[in-house]
Length: 366
Ligand SMILES: [Mn+2]
Image (cartoon, rainbow, N blue to C red; front, side):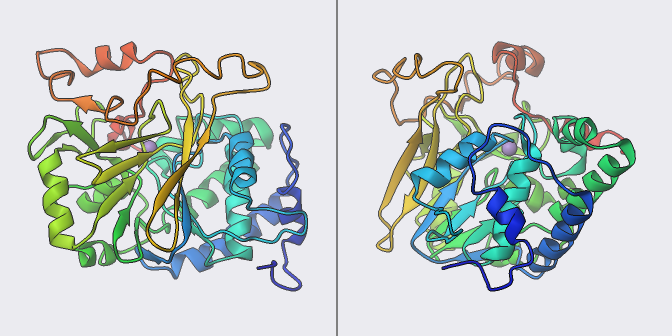
């Protein structure tokens, strides 16, 4: 499928087809117009997207623009004419943490405009003001533009983020979201009924869980998510019951770094996909992208944790000791509040990049 004739953003689209590890130059007025046009399409979509097969599902990107390029290259997505051949579902967390939040979100939005049905974008917990104010996106804009323009761009992007759909159902059988499930989710219509825009997704309990919750091993039911400071941990029984109730086969979510890029949970009824390799450099994690064919058969593309600096020397470290099981998930026994430990200690154990928390979401906003 080629881009539409006389596509207004052909120049911008082409700019993103070329692999580059430098920041791109953008025209602020063009960006503002792009956001406005993309918002129009996104706002008209339902809160629960319906996605057809085959499709490629991508987890957290977090400003790692080079890795977004690797993903497009891996799945054979792009050729020089800008043709697109794959249907994508992105699970959110496009911005923050990495060095190129702007390139990532602009690349995705311009593709959304060129191929609205092929590029499906969900909201992550970082697509919200309270979070991307403090985890990198705002600072990146301030570094790249004069203050007034940076503030305007940041507000305009966040206004678009408030309109992003919150979940997707693939082929009627696979439910996808950024964070996970929660006690307020009893039917697909519950998701469809969420009104957007949602400036602060945490004001809607179901939206908050879709963006923030995490699975926990050895847990029954739900408990407060003490590491995130918002939403819940959910146990295997809640996944089993939800699959029965909603007549779905699988839940696919992102939101947590997996050493292998992906990790099954609950006897393969839930799958985490994380697409930002070396997100924790000291853990040398892989990234993964999920491929679902038209017969619902799934497979993975893996991104090895190489960079131009490491030149692949760490490529094989741990390759043969890692399993595709639940090893990256929190277990009830290790939970920070289980034996009187504190969540602060838990986060410090994870090294320089700690999991994002929603504590800021409760702080007074500017
Ligand atoms: Mn997240």
